[in-house]
Amino acid sequence: MRILHVAAEVYPLVKTGGLADVVAALPAALADRGLDVRLLLPGMPAILNGVSDLQRVIRLGPAFGAAVITLCLGRLPDSGLPAYVIDAPFLYRRDGNPYLGPDGRDWSDNHRRFALLGWIAAHLAGGDLDHDWQPTVVHAHDWHAGLAPTYVAQNPALNTATVFTIHNLAFRGLFPL
Image (tube, rainbow, N blue to C red; front, side, top):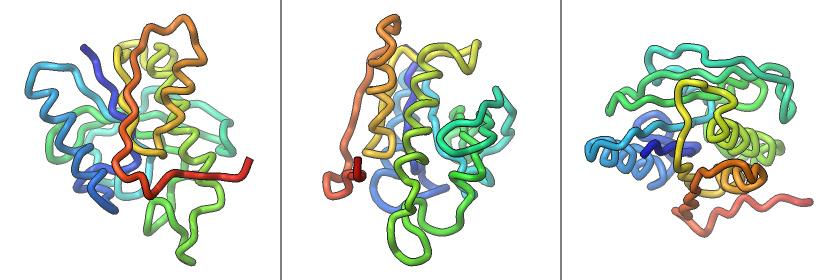
């Protein structure tokens, strides 16, 4: 079984709550049981600086407001698990909180920032981005990755299973239409 965990946080690189702890522990525990596990993370500065041996998989764009998007593959610092990182500077290279600007309010483009995360997950599931690896299960963690199962469902040819876990119901990622 090949499992892709999709999340906006992972300990120790980016952590605002318990989500980062689960995303660090669960994939590692599954890998210890012999499953082929990878993560997909947005290219926030701490993630780009913390994932080692980043190599470009494919270059895309424009999409979701970003002119250039580079999907890279590297290794997490603690577990050594493979992690895809979406390097889209226009959307992710921002200091501080991954969800909030310096004014304490949501980034005005969070809907695009995290829609891209789910879109990349679905295209990995479809075998469009990495011809060497394709997940059989996409596990989306919290609202940031919540569109991944929807994007996967839009391709009826895919046999990819999806799991959506809500870690904190207080944060729902609600946006105006």
